[in-house]
Length: 57
Image (cartoon, rainbow, N blue to C red; front, top):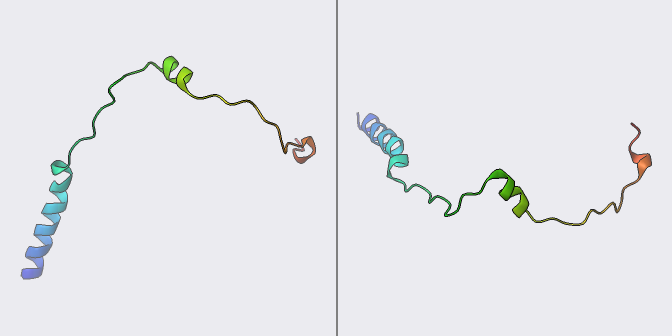
């Protein structure tokens, strides 16, 4: 009887836990897809270590 009660209380607590947590804050700024892609950092292309013979197709 006690085990069933403890299990029921634990299950109820676990079921209600997501409701008690705070929601994450939303981003302060919204970007379009194009602007977001433009904001990504770019690096120079490097082909160090590339050998055509390693790729037979």
